[in-house]
Image (cartoon, rainbow, N blue to C red; front, top):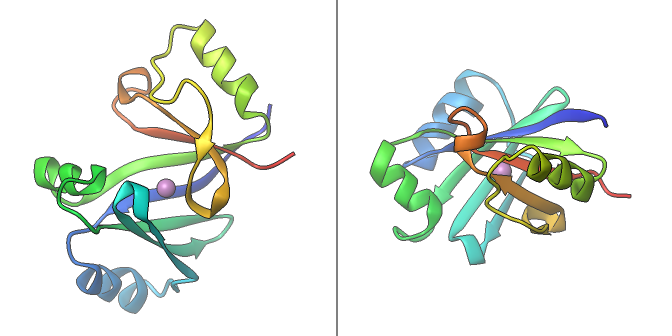
Length: 134
Ligand code: CO
């Protein structure tokens, strides 16, 4: 199975100052911004080669990103890997004893089928698996 880095999600507490670094100083460009209302987050995608950085703003303090920021402050929130068959990837993880947050795929940003793997299975990193589409 092919596995590629899709994006790295970075929680930010102030989008304008984050853009002051990632856009104005590093030179990345914001390609798209999307509100994921159900998750209380606004995501801004900055392509960087074959992958992207995703700046994540909380739109509610009690949303997952809002709680992350409250607990740990800004920083890397998740790493998203593209897989060609999400069901097969989840089945292999489950068979290997990995703890999954999503036992079955759900719809994430951009309408893609995604599932999160618990950080306890991935050595402290929240992993999002995203299906490339069949
Ligand atoms: Co993401």
